[in-house]
Image (spheres, rainbow, N blue to C red):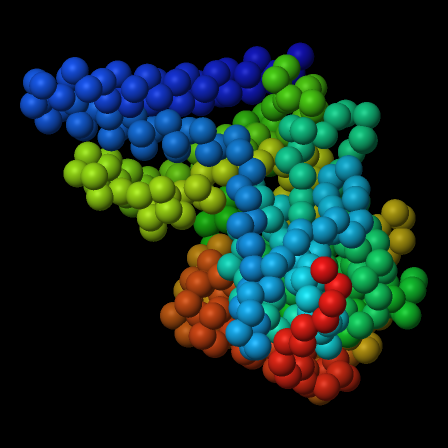
Length: 423
């Protein structure tokens, strides 16, 4: 079958490296070997520890790890992850805060489906939880979805967002991060035309490629150079026999990770070499800075082939969103139909993935929206990750987004957490 052997070969290589790391760590850790006083044994054990952890993380979905948040009354509030809407390719989940009354702000975070799990926005969720009821799109790994579940492309993705927004109601404030920004904009326009009463109150687009041609990056240059036939040949494989989605055409997470790592190969090599030396000296820990970052960065998921290919072709090559020619289920989605939802764009000055100009293009496309309901922000010195999860988000962008929501959502600004007896 098409590329199934290649998929299984990549998984075999990963599995072998994990096994070699575990073996090296176990062998070099025998108490008897300590009598030799050979420093190479410590290095061997450290190499094995770092290698085993790195390769094992590649096939494990990280945990959200949000156990509780502090309350103003001096008590911690436990947080439960609850499924609100369950679908084959992704769920809508809520971070339910126990003993807290419903908040005035209700926020839906549309997480990226671009190689990493939705847990990539963990710090974004954590920062918003004290001030809002937070919901997140939790996308599934395509390798775990049986072929019987059918296809999943950009139109299906858009309709998923439409269903999620409908289920939450019109008092929702949507924040779309990176890849889903154009499709979230399209979903909002779809609701504006088909079901106006279900529109969200506000829409914040952070670092998304609304118009990829507005500012060139390595990502857009690659999309321009390669043909769809070439892309399918080099990127698409069939899930192997190890997973439930056996036979499904996907863009494998391991192949995506190879691309991610190659973009900054020298920096990653240095980081792993330094971690091995720290482990050899006994200075590494389970949750040190290196492990916190790479436990998330190395955890990759397969994307459905039709979603990846249709994203490249329709969003980047044909620029259907940028030209306001996007269709869903045979219906043209007119971005000019957005007349009530306040829209804000956020960009990072040093974003090398969605460069400044790509996201703010959304405001020009919303021709039916008055200027009073449009806002934009360019964060100085900020890179891509920083505008939704880094220092720039924590110190500057998050307060600006919350102020934008309060100014346009028509609800009073939330004050303090209030304890209630609901569990």
